[in-house]
Image (tube, rainbow over all chains, first blue to last red; front, top):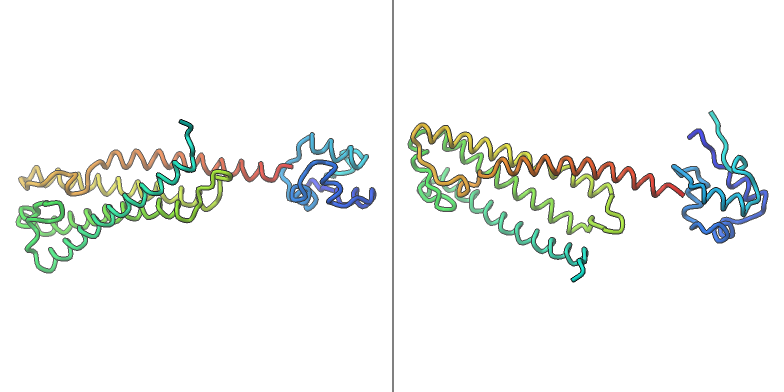
Length: 67
Length: 181
């Protein structure tokens, strides 16, 4: 898929575990895992907003387009 | 009184089993009578449901065998259809929490084909009986011979075919929704 999710990179930079992120964002670990492994087909703006808020980053830090 | 889908499913499950047993009895009866008619031939005048095939046999035994084959195919297809329906309930594929699953989709894909086959065979049997009736062969009613309502079966088959296409699309939408975070 051309859109790559760099969630694990940001989580490592912020030294945050999946459990902690899941609690703060309000998503289940299963859903975060789907996002992290690149299996997600779509992401809601509200989810993206919550992740960016918790990880203190920009959407471009999480999502990357690779041809 | 509030409509409870779970109770309704249990009622449908029971009804499906009841109709399946009745169709199996009918299929067994027709099959047994067919084999007995082929071996002995004494029951031709009093076939299943008191259907009299003696005049057809004396007119042309090839048509007799043809009508027998059609009757057997139709009743076996009906049994097959009911078996599928009972299997859907038995395998617990009707999960109202997540109804759009692949197993149910595959059942819904097969059902209209079986129903259309029943309709086509019934229509063909009806057509054969009409032609033979015009030639002077007397028959019992189409209902007794189990080849009636071909149009209804075909209409049901087409409607179910459309529903299965919609269900397939629903499944794609559900898969997409499941992978939307």
